[in-house]
Amino acid sequence: MEMYQRMADELLIACHECDLLHIKREIPLGGSARCSRCGSVLYRRPADTVDAALALTAAALVLFLLANFYPFIYFKVAGRIEVNYLITGVFTLNDYGMPPLAGLILLCSILAPGLKIALMLYVLVPVKFGRTVPGLARAFRWLETISPWGMIEVYMMGVVVAIVNLLAIASIDYGMAFYCFVALFFVMAAASAKLDPHLVWERLE
Picture 1 (cartoon, helix red, strand yellow):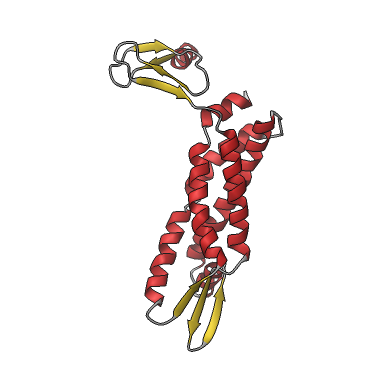
Picture 2: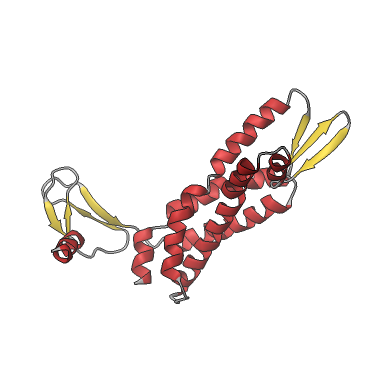
């Protein structure tokens, strides 16, 4: 019974506006299927977005490396300049006796985004060139699992709050890594938006 229900779910789709059932049919790239009763869009098949997602992910990799290896922020206090990198906050929190918070910052700002970029490249490069590599489907499932943990925007909000508080006691200059990290947020968001899971699974099959 479950098998028949699953087959019905794969073959039929209900209109979101009038609930009329339709049989799913193959549509061309860039096309859309509309309800025969009310004309609402049932589903779309976007144009091949693999190229765009791959290009954006490659750009995200470059920005990620620059954000981690170049100075993030310079603090100037009493004539002394302190250079801070992206990882500096993790070490500082650990030194102040807050290892759980340091670990969370490390996960959300460095490990998860880095792993997400690596998995996207591992999936998109073979999909682009029509190749098969070991564990491709499993890697794509991991990508969907870890995506919520790459919360760069939350880290950036914390940085902004810290900068506002420190402006009263120190002069602050922004390093290249700061601008790369801000750009990384927008590039990764665009890459995720361009990555069409249905198209990827179709290619994997």
